[in-house]
Structures are given as C-alpha cells and as structure tokens.
Image (tube, rainbow, N blue to C red; front, side, top):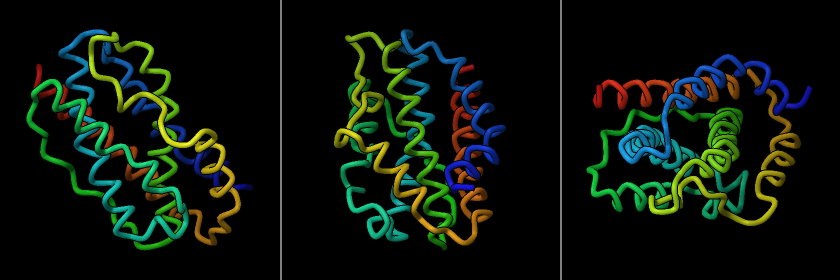
Length: 178
C-alpha cells in the first residue's frame, strides 16, 4: 500500500473532523472569514517553519514555491488584524514525519481552492487561491508515493498531529469570537 493510501486511510477521521469544523465558517462573511484566516495563521507558519528547519527542501526541491505563510499573513494584514499566537508545531524528526505533515498542508491547498470560490472578490483571497507551479499537487503525490518511507506510522502520527493543530486552532478562534 502506498504511503498516500496509508495516510488517507489512517487520518480520514481527523480529516473529517477538521472539514466539519472549518465547514461551519461562512467565508462570504467578513468576520467569519477573518476568523478562518486567523485559525490557519495559528498553524501554517509554524508547521512550514518546522518543515523547513527539518530539511524538507531535500525531499521537495520546489518547497519555497509551495510555502503559503506570506500569502496568509498578507491576507490578514489587509484586514488589519493582529497575528494570533501560533500553536507549537509538531516535532519532525524523521523523513516519514516530514511527509506526514506535508501531506496535510498540501491537501489543504486542494480544499482551499474549493473554499476560495466562497470568498467574495472584495475580500483578500491570495492564501486560498491555488498557487505554485502547475501540476504541483501531482508532483507532490508522485514524490510521496515514491518516498520509500519505512516507518509509515511516523508519517501517520505527524499527519494526525497537524490535523489536530488545525482543529485546536479553529476551536480557539471560534471561542474567541463567541
């Protein structure tokens, strides 16, 4: 079974929980969209930095083009919002963990492309719009499948950890505006 299949199967529950939570946000509503972006800002920059610090560029040479932190921070800045306190990133001590964390971030781009259609044109939307080279997701999936990871459990653990961060961040932001 490919690592992608293992990750999909063993994180499906986390993925569904995160999708359910973030599906409650009405991205056509300015306040809810700002809250959505702030939740992502608690996770994405920290995880991207952790991936970079752990050497993701060795596994994915086009990593710099895949980063979305600057797009996210620019969208938040357009609203004039302060940046929220980031959550601590996962420990990424193995190649398997890198692939697991990256699986979640790259997958969120696909979801983001669908969500971008809900964001009105007058609101900042660069974070959710597809970016990077054409075919980037296919390239990622091909590299993931060819990774030869010998510890899929570590990849699953890291992916579940990142999904958990998104869940916690979404809950924190929703509590803050309630």
